[in-house]
Length: 81
Length: 199
Image (cartoon, rainbow over all chains, first blue to last red; front, side):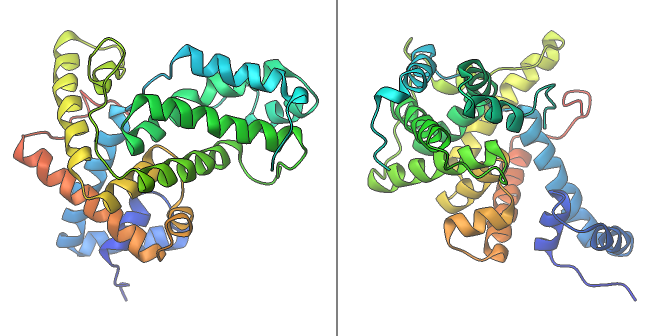
């Protein structure tokens, strides 16, 4: 018997947050459910674009310098928490 | 996820023993990811810079005072600190400023691209430019989950815990974020092409 999966289950599948057993059951369900397969392909393609775009911005050097200076002079600080 | 010859936990262990170079390596390894995640939430580069420094001050204080829990992973832990500080700030100052760099350009114009053919680069630049706009247009709750999952490497369980919702709600928000992005992409004829987006 084919297990029924929700569209939220597809998100867990696409983001690999599913057990192997559940994943293989979902993969099987996709073969018999065209609508689920259609949604899955769209979700996966969109996720792949987001991953490929790799939105990344470098912080200014001064921020990094401040952090490193703080660490080096840590013993001079009083930790408030 | 990238593999490094020296792991984060090895660097943290060295740092705990007073090795400042190990800390410098950790900062340089993760600074762009942390800064970008903060920037996507607060949308102001000066605030993002402050919050990134505040994040690392907490990291230094925690590790150097021997309160760091070695069981957890370093980056997700730092990301959680960054996220909490960013959300606190965002909620106190609920506004949407335009992100402007020192030279007057929009922050997203500085985003990096992998080396590729001129045509592919142009297509990706166009896509990139539109995608950043689409992400900005998402409802707050959906954008928040998307940032936490894609830029902070948080699991849906962690996202649910951090945002005070059920896992199902977090999953639903992610699903709607992807569906909405997809609709916007379809409207602008952006499709996944493995030649442009190699795995």
